[in-house]
Image 1 (tube, helix red, strand yellow):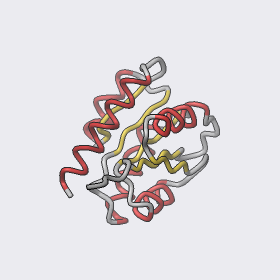
Image 2 (cartoon, helix red, strand yellow; image 1 turned 90 degrees about the vertical axis):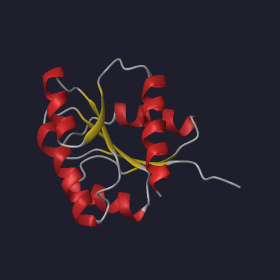
Image 3 (spheres, helix red, strand yellow; image 1 turned 120 degrees about the vertical axis):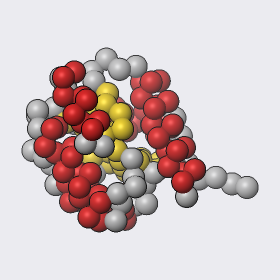
Image 4 (tube, helix red, strand yellow; image 1 turned 180 degrees about the horizontal axis):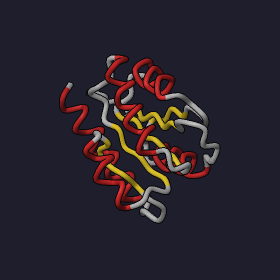
Length: 137
């Protein structure tokens, strides 16, 4: 039996134009065997959700450095639910204060990665999210 690689969408919601971290994580996941869809910068939550559903991804990763993570990350989850992708796990990263992480997790963000997180930890976490998602299907 042949299994396909896990598909992950990396999105940059809002007006944040800093994409270095998103591109780094995209490349790291690709090099680890994932198929990666990168939406580019300045996307609305609805655009990210539509792309995730259309691309049939196993997980969505969000990157934000603008400080709007408390608004935009939950907005992406809401847009996914509205678009029929409410079961897709979402992880996030960027310059996110430690005190904001519990609220993001309560909002449905499965994992949060801040600067300095070892890439092997990101890959392991995303792999586990995708494996759990694949087990549901």
